[in-house]
Amino acid sequence: MAGKASNMNFRDRNQIAAFAITLGSILLLSLLFPNTLRFKYEFEEGKVWRYDDLISPYDFGIVKPKDELQQEYAMIDSSFSNYYIKDNEKVEAVLDAFQSDFKKTLLAQTGENLEMVRTQSQSYVDYGSELIIEYYGLGIVNSDSVLDARDMQLMHTLNGNQLTTIKPLDVSQVNTLIRNDLANSNLVHSSFLYPLIIRHIHPNIYFDPNLTNKVRKSEKDKIAVTRGKVSRGELIIAKGGVITSDIAQKLESFKIAHERQVAQNKSHWFVWSGYFILMSLLLGAFTSYLWQWLDRKTYSVKMHLFILSGFLMFAFVSYLVEQNGTLSIYIVPFCIAPIVLKTFFDDKIAFTSHAVLIISIALIFSFDSEFVLLQMAAGLVALVSNKVTRYWTPFFRSILFIAITYMLGYLSLTVIKEGNLKSIDWSNYSWFVINTILVLLAYPLVPLLERIFGFTSAISLAELGDLNRPLLKELSFKAPGTFQHSLQVANIAEVAADAIGADSLLLRVAALYHDIGKMKEPEIFIENQSELNPHKDLDPLESARKIIDHVPNGVILARKYGLPKSVIAMIKSHHGTTRLNSFIKQVKLKMNYR
Image 1: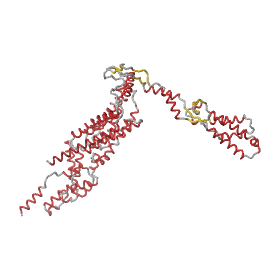
Image 2: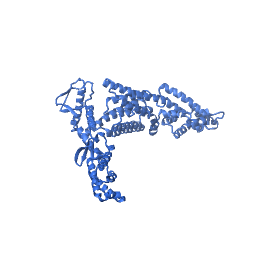
Image 3: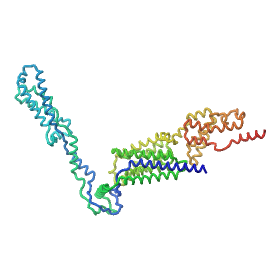
Image 4: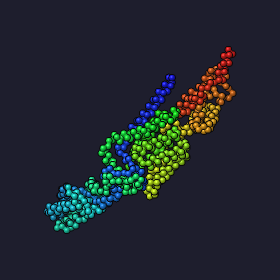
């Protein structure tokens, strides 16, 4: 009774832990729940409206199609002129610098030919200053910094607080104009001024990105985003009607208006609770399935934690992809999940988990049926195309089949929806290629995950079955008879396991290692003896003890070498509860003799 109570308490604790893990996973997933309402109608152009007659409950405008709006925005961009800012305060600093430079240069000159400049220095300074004021007033720009060549012909500038339109002067153009003005002046030594003025000619017009974007946005805001309207009480579409392009646009507009109307009165917590209840139903049913329908040897809390950790990882990766905006959800390698789960467990757990994962992702991120169908098909192909994830050739073949499934599935779904191949988004095929390349990570992930969670995979079992493994080589040297015996048992166990549908690889590996405990005293066992039998000189009880000890000795050695728990369990139990009858008979004979 105490044993049964203890067992029940253990089961109850495991069940509580399982549902606690599920609840924690749902709460973490709730961080990704959208704060948006979902439109209660699903529609697609060219399909039949399967709902009742849809009558508008309020007035709303018919939104223009996105491509039409994009064309109108593009027209503004193509004809739009950039805006620049003119720095009028710069000329004062330039004049001061020019006049100071003039005085220093004149003092440094000693030639008599500049005597006229010295006596009429103020006239030279005034003339140079007038030229600087004139050209800075017209506006000087460096043509290399102009975004559009058309801006050199007609430039919008902000002069103080006033917007004006000018034809600016390029720096090189100003240099030529100054040379001509000085040549036509009445100054005798006008050439003296040229290098001085040129040194102080710099752009005073600069591109203003903030003003440009503000004006461009203002121009785009003037474009009407609607054309026509639907009045309250007007029939949008009747039941059974075909959704034409015009009706599809009305439905899309109604969806926007409906969400805007309801959003004014909606509660974020109501939306959140709706998603929370749906995820609770889905993951709660999945947890009940694992708990109720898997036997106790298959199910474990560790397995449950492993599967739901995978759910969380894929959910947050999907969130990052969606937030990025430039990536497609089809880049996420969801097929890693069924491949890895099948490696550790079985097809049933792998496919059920994959199905729940895909439905959860579709629910959280509002992905359509196309996403669900493609991912479910690819996951199913990943399971049936590769029996065991331990050989490279079938694994690569499975990857190829997954890629073909994505590509043909997407092609067929597009043809079903559009009725032609013109609407196919061929860029998705590049995402499918990247996706299948990333699925290759499943192979190196298996040994990593089994070390983290303590599972046993076919890959590690295949490595342990290599006869060149250190422990098996040591067995072949120390106990060659036992080694040959283990090989024979392994071959028999493998054939028998295949016949009854058991795990033949696990049984073969366990058989290879089941007698490693005999290495401590190999000569005690008959398969390793020659002419001398140590048992002749031993007490029967001591002989029995030495033979029996090879089981616990094997367990100690297996743990030392890090063998999987499933293999250690078979080493521990490979003799069952049988007795060594031959030694018991010897003891009885000795007792009768006495």
